[in-house]
Image (cartoon, rainbow, N blue to C red; front, side):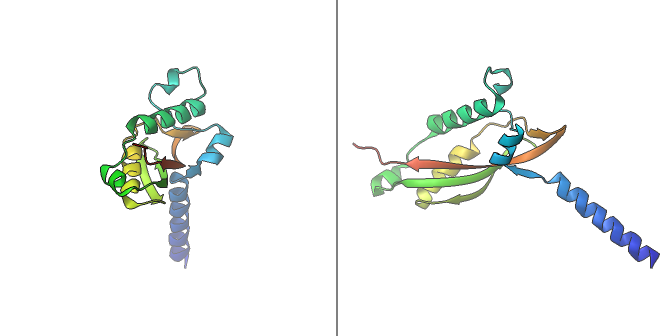
Length: 143
């Protein structure tokens, strides 16, 4: 009986420590706590890390945006929403993509996956993942 209790206690402790290692905060919760991944060179910016991250993300999307040729030809447009995390190693992981046509979704995924590696967000001294949701709107250019 004692061995069974010891085994159960070890399993519970392992599960609890595993759950703590895999903390993922939503962007809103992270902002409330002032926690954000650090975009390269944002640590030297005059802006707050959160504001710098937001500006760099917007600039990255604009700079890397390419309307897919097949989407232009087919007259496709719409908004694609990409849910992703910056994991505790500072790398991007795309979780879910919704909206618009799959050709537009592929382009949105490509843009997000091209994000640079960052310094991960930290809760105290421990790196954690932060979840983001970004809408990317594709408006067919007028020729």
